[in-house]
Image (cartoon, rainbow over all chains, first blue to last red; front, side, top):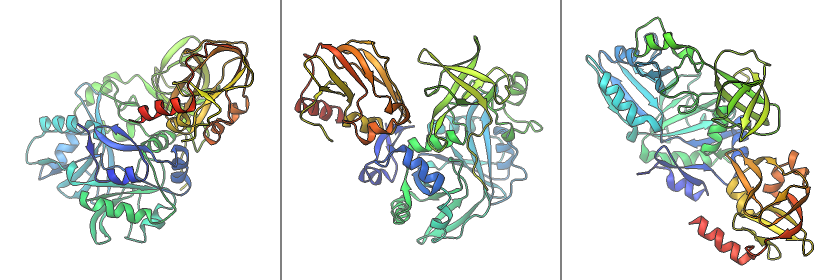
Amino acid sequence: MTNKTPLYKEHVALGGRIVDFAGYFLPVQYPTGVIKEHMAVREGVGLFDVSHMGEVTFRGKDALANINYIFTNDYTNLKNGRVRYGVMCYEDGGCVDDLIVYRMGEEDFSVVVNASNRHKDVAWIRKHLSGDVEFEDVSDSYAQLALQGPLSGEVLGRYTELPQKYYSFINTQILGRDVIVSQTGYTGEYGFEIYCRPEDAVELWRELLKDERVIPCGLGARDTLRLEAAMPLYGHEMDETVSPLETGLDFGVKLTKDFIGRDAMMARKNRHRIGIEITGRGIAREHCDVYIGDRLIGHTTSGTHCPYLKGAYAMALVDEAYEPGTELTVDVRGRRIEGKVTELPFYKRER
Amino acid sequence: MNTPKELKYAKTHEWVRFTSDTECEVGLSDFAQDALGDLVFVNLPETDTEAIRGETICDVESVKAVSDVYAPVSGTVTAVNEDLLDSPELINNDPYGAWLFRLSNVTDTDELLDAEGYEKVCAEEEQ
């Protein structure tokens, strides 16, 4: 069964091309088109419906101990009002999901997970809870908007104060509605995510779109933006067969503490995630074999034409680390296309 | 959706403009370019390629995906539109101006549709 977010009718009214994504009807693009939507976020401001994302909460005396054991990162020194990335792993070190943790209070954490993994995540977490902790799936109690782009602060700042630091959040009000606003996003750009009650979503969406600079953006642009910024996506750069260390998420893994999957992933770290700039003619997408000479070194996990960089880029999981500039080829539908290893991220905003 | 009456169409969304009894230009319909979204790469056939009706002759890529282009008729490729190599967006901007390739010795034209017949195909796909 496919769900509709509270904004479904808005997407249809705006001419969005609706697809079933992770069990939700969402727009892959509006008539504006993916390239203009993408550029709006890099150069102006774009608005996304990301209400499909899952939210779960951990509350109680042992909430911190539980997330520190079930997730790879260490949340001990995470301050109230701050956000931190992490991964959840199986015993063998493969990824259950990746996520971000909001510290709402001393013993109160909210966690945002991928929509496609929500039910699997909830089952996995429940199986590993211990001590004094109350765990709840609150996904259906929240809608979520993402306002992303260099002008996002100017637009949103007319309605509320803003969280000033990257990966921080505040509880505030917009149009008298209670919301959580965080300086987070999945675009590699300055921007905000707004959590609200489902019944308030339409009003907030319409209000933000009153500013003509705000361009509604679909899943297509969300994917090209995250890829251009080399942000990993579950099911592509990581899955149950890939450990977070292999896919370059070391910064979100604290091997000095005990957590599920730690020993296994330390024993098996062998692959690397690299960036590839396609220098030949064509576009490498996911599941293309990557070669140096005649030697197969791995496969692409995501790839597309990046609208801001105006070129084809891909990420790949390969057998060892390769220096930027290393020449390689990618098998695209039976044709070898030239490329070279390039540093990640492909795009990094100026701060 | 724009479907010029003077052109013929394949149900696989290519348009055909006959320049003589045995020569034609081939491009992608307005319906096709709209469905594909922003095009960012065109992989054209080589000249002298024998096109066989219903078989893949080249491909185009949008941000989202690669899509095969099928030969709407059989014939020999005599020219390709090299402007598209650097400017694939011409297909989005002007689908009936942005021809992909030209064919000579054209045969297998029986299954081509007129504009009205093609619009019905599109209407069914929209369902």
